[in-house]
Length: 296
Image (cartoon, rainbow, N blue to C red; front, side, top):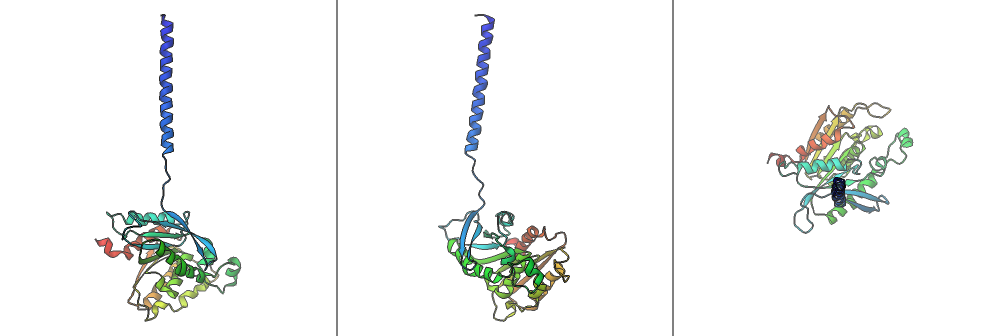
């Protein structure tokens, strides 16, 4: 056999080996792709609302270790603006992180993100300001949204999931306005109110002139209220108002009730603005809402 034949055979063998290795690598890569699975953060549920005459989407996070067939029950954190592309993911991250056993700041909790449909409609009460009526024609239906939460959403969650009666609500801006209205008009809906940068300028600040139900002697539910505001400046109104001032006025109004069942914390965050405040405020609120857990 000539040297030329040996060379050809060697070349053929090398080419065959390279081909086999390439095919093996390709098969391995295909297997890796085949076993890839989606990263699941929670579940998406729909609820048909008679109060709102529409379907509403809920994004729900269940804590690690949640099992339908055991006896453990959990607090529920309700989140306004709770769509996946709004605040659901980063707030769930804060809840999960702070409930790690080596941190133990927050008890393991269910988070219910209420996906937004029309926040100007759902989060505002009727206004007397003609310019706002024209700019935002769907506004003024917060009473229906509060009825949805109390009559439909909370019973749905309590029936479907293992809850322990502790209920927190978180909202910012117009969401903060709505939560303030809840606190004033239907305070028994929640145990904990996290109010961030509330748009109290709505209807020229008329909500600040109302007498809240928490001022009545008959209201004896232990309730915690956390209010946060950043360096946010003037409000979008014809009559100038300042966000920080309005938030302070709200805190003072709650203090004036002298209700011993109300625990209040006011948090001024000068390094944050209206766009950046929510994440830091929610993190801070957990230290206020769960002080005993934090010390353990």
